[in-house]
Length: 598
Image 1 (tube, one colour):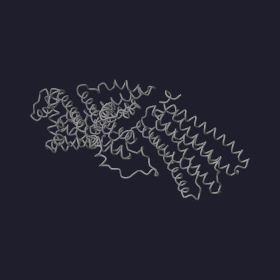
Image 2 (image 1 turned 180 degrees about the vertical axis):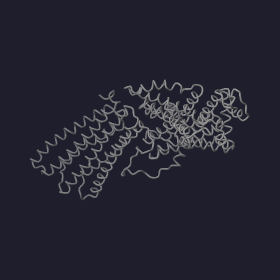
Image 3 (image 1 turned 90 degrees about the vertical axis):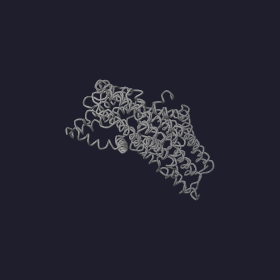
Image 4 (image 1 turned 45 degrees about the vertical axis):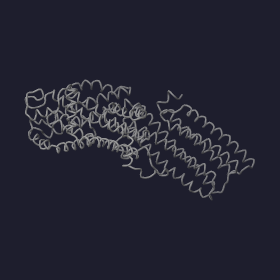
């Protein structure tokens, strides 16, 4: 046998080059799209039709249904998309992914794109060193495109020549003539290979090579591709493992959609393959099943088979066309049937994965950020933004607790539980800051657009300042605790002034939460309001500080009461400063702001 271990390792290397090219090409396009990609997904999912079209367009753009479904899972996890909207996008993604198969099919035999790869690399590599990020990302796309087809060409070269290796041919023949058993074996092979490669495009490329080499028939090639349709669901499943319930339901919906459709086609597999073959003949002029018949009949020297019994270029082109047509017809029919049952589909998914228990807001839990094995960095920014907004709302509750504690005495039943809650929230705040900060740092290490990197920097500053607000609330609670331990009481006039100050603090925090809810498009009026409110807090602090000296001198209250009064006013003023720092982070660290905020 002439096929050596070195040849086999070279085949594995060729597959790796193909997968790497697919990865670089996909990431390059995602970086070119950047925020626009996230905005399109966030906006164009208002109904089933636009959701499906979005799934088709996004998947055709980034050349990966796995990447687009991971994005959808991220959006659902971040609360930006409902399960019903996600299902529509996933339905469309399954159709959009066929664009990749058509590209591979079109260039595989009609045009040997690998011959032009060096020329494209000569264009793509210099672009990667340009200053403008869009050119760099487009250069990555071209380099990935070249690697993809160079890998495909090398796969074709290193796949064993069955004509020269009859031992391997006999081995394969043992599994290709089992009727229904052969279909099931190669169907399972498609599932396993796609799960390992995490790319249905890779499965299609390998299948195309196997069929063109005469290794397997067109029918068995369709079985592998059908299995790959199930195997590709492993990627969003992995991405959703540590997400919230909605994200896991989205991944489950993707699995059910592909599995149900594949099993239905598997039950009527041969009639469906005949349908695809007839469509291929109507479009291309040759029925791909007739090529297998010619091989079995030993008809050499024809337009389909050469003198050695191998496929001619015309036959290879027909097989490539038919293999690309198979997933197109399958996914189109699956979509046209399933789209009318979206609501029922959502109910089934919710029934399979019910809500176990209501999340306890008093326990440490990140709602939107997970630790999945896979990520899409641009979309992780959206998850972090939602988590930061939730973080801000937790800290806002601490302000309410601190205000409540001002009017409590140590003998009151609610006093100690309120202090304990503030202490617990402060611990939760520290942990949330650490978790969100760690997540943002990992996102910053990913493949982000320059705008995305600026947002991450801004969010890191915002998270730090929110944690400072939590610390300030805890300092208020500790100040009140010391006051009560030495039995110092505030008179009604002091309490009114403290409430007046903390009213301003609460209003400032409400404005900050409004900004956190619209990080990408903050309103100029909220920015202005934040500065005005901080000035009000400072002016009131100065007025109360001067009045405090006057009141102590006039014996309206004693010195100790005045000290604690000023401590609470000082902490309130610091809270105002921290809130303004959050606003500064929003204003200066996001590139989308210069056109809207002056």
